[in-house]
Image (tube, rainbow, N blue to C red; front, top):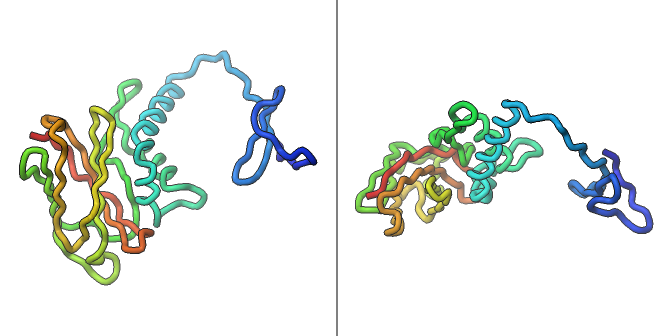
Length: 213
């Protein structure tokens, strides 16, 4: 890869002959076109491709949530989405090639220095109504009464996510009503806290897997 020094015609992007012009973080560069390989991918390569695809499919719909959830624990040069992606592909995929499944309990959608919720409990109080309850225990260091509570629910059958907020640590409960069409469906959930400044979060906690009545 070579850096491109702009001339009187400026830089360019896209394929020109056997090279490609592009830009990354304000730096223009050119690189050779990759050579096509005639070799058959190994089982290890195929396995990695499947894991990569599973991770992308799962996380892409909540990219903004992940950017928030990892806002105070980003590694240098990496976004919250990148950190979540690496954690997922290393920890949240079970099984052997080619039969992989997701370990929802190992999925992490937030990581930070705020205290997690104590006494966390979830129950379906009425058909398709989930009540998330916790102990309203705070302190002046990392568990503030006005910490926002953020819940993410996931529908595995349709690969859909739902986000809920509006309650605080001191409220001790959140009621979530799902559509009538979710009768009999399986729902998975996670919860985390957000500081009033919007920049500090807790690590996420797994709520469990529920079959709605």
